[in-house]
Length: 116
Image (tube, rainbow, N blue to C red):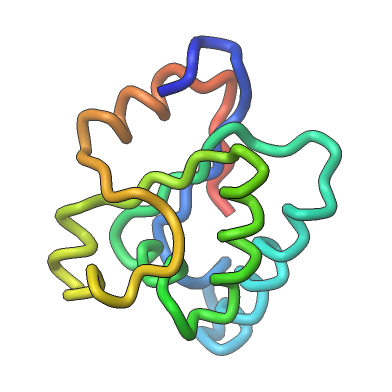
């Protein structure tokens, strides 16, 4: 959990960015996540729900970047219901399984939320 005004949160609701082309969207979201490593002003938390939880799995193409962000102290919260729905628990490469209460609280207390 973050304290109010303590930082911003990025919420991933899909394993793609934008709409129009699924292939392009998958490429864009990977580039976006990889670029987070280069930011000076990093988010305090990354939240993953619905199809976004697929990004935290081995073979997603961003598992190394997510693990590196996590090692830098950035919290990665994964919706447990979503992980179970997609049967991904054994495939997770980074993050911690959480619940919707904690995710809701994290989003509500963020200084702002970015939805790529």
